[in-house]
Image (cartoon, rainbow, N blue to C red):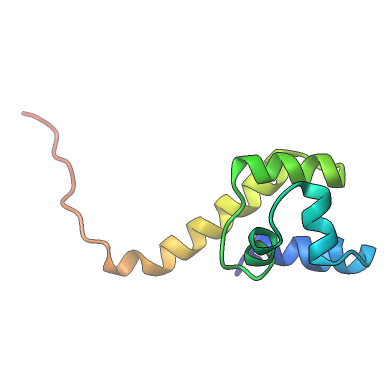
Length: 93
């Protein structure tokens, strides 16, 4: 299953349903409009600080936002994992 980027969750589940614009939400969160726009459009991830801001504004937990971001990041990395080449560690004899 493809995880949803946390920015899409923020936009669809919160901002759109509350009829809050990105500009208004950015102001309430205390961040630049460009920063929030990049987040909701999936061009940047949720930082720990942003997770705290979102949790305070939306009555959620920072862990919710960090877990969504971690799940999304891991999914992206696993898609690229065929290009990751490593040499396995060997136990000392």
